[in-house]
Image (cartoon, rainbow over all chains, first blue to last red; front, side):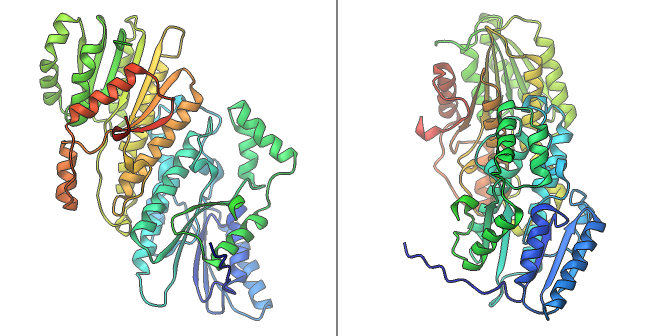
Amino acid sequence: TENNSVRAPDLGRALCVITGASRGFGRTAARQMSRLLKPSSALVLAARSGDELRALQAELVADAEAGGGGLLVEVVPADLAQPDALEPEVKTILYETPPSLPASLGDVSRYAKSFTNMAEVDSYLSLNVSSSLCLTASFLQAFPQRPGLRRTVINLSSLCAVQPFRSWVLYCTGKAARDMMFRVLAEEEPDVRVLNYSPGPLDTDMQMLARSRTADPDIKKSFSNMFAQGQLLTCEASCTKLVKLLLEDNYVSGAHVDIYDV
Amino acid sequence: MSTLGKGICIITGASKGFGRALAHEVSPLLEPGSVLLLVARSGALLQELKEELHSFTDKQQLAVHCVAVDLATRTGVNETVRIVRQEAENKIDHVLLINNAGSLGDISEFRSFTDIETVNSYLSFNVSSALALTAGVLQVFPCRVGLRWSVVNVSSILALNALPSWVLYCTAKAARHAVFSVLSKEEPNVKVLSYSPGPMDTAMQVDILRLTGIRHCLYPCQESAAKLIKLLLDNDFTSGKHLDFVDV
């Protein structure tokens, strides 16, 4: 197949929304994306931590000004697990990285047979699956298809979406559910660009939780080894690859793309 | 293997359709002293089913219990586990849990799903409930030598393939497949089977026709149920696998 790597220079004049923007991959994405937004763009950052968001907001606004452009940056400190948080303010979604670590990773210190409490599973699915469906649906309603408007939805996926990991039932389930959800979107709305991006093993707080709390000894060891052997990726390196994918815009909508495929 | 052993067999969504057909297929294969728990919301329909099975109850000493609960609620799940625990007194050599209960959900455009409660309640019944029930039963019957454990996840081709307007159903089926895949990796002594039964002549298909206008070629429930039971009898499948009615 033809290697058609014609890259757009930037993301254009865009409304870019990033959830889970206060740290980790979300924060890196905010920084990288902001540099690719043309003047008159707006960046909306959502996460639970208002303080961290405001600090990031100040940083990005200052950087944009220093670069001669202007960037409108809005922050939405909200708990995505609460239904009220899903107000029209957060109208569009470009990223989904859940805000709170244990809430997003789930309890990896336990096995599937310990999840006898339905409410616990419900709460996990609400934050990690339902909220991303509802936010994305709101986005599509707020910005219906029209000529000249490009709509892109990115789901931060994982190897766990396609492969089972012992003691990771909630995380694997949430990721598998999300991948499928966004595959359905891709099938339904061919003009929406949908990407299930698996960022690789990132050197983040979530990774630290993974290697310290995983119940399964083999899985835990493999995380520890990756860390010890310097195999973890920086958020910057992974996000750079994501940006490449976005600018080249060649990916099959709905595809699960792993960083190692890029 | 020509029987399913002396077992406790739990079938959810047993009052109609595929679940009901499974009850019929499984009953002749359970050895004397076995227990069959039929779980669904409708006590009346379950009672009817129990009466249909009376020849097995009498001749084969099969104890059939109707558990009329709503598995969309934690009360329903906990009550089912409580009844399973009561039956744990009996010495059995096979636990067979068939997670069949499920719902179609709203077949609508992706963009229509802006209400989180709608999505939450769908996932709760179709995903959380199956995990919580399976976990509960696993706790009642921990793995031990001499105890065969089989769990079935009644799945769908839509666990693997995305279909426009079917976001809720596809998402839940994909989620369930992940739940049971992880379980199969964690529990080497539990045989886990995700079985996609194919389009059957059920009330759910009537709803599908009404909502989508699409008529599928439907198979009798009994045929698909018989195939599933045969898979369990033969016990050749790799745990965690996803098998489809048309492939077996």
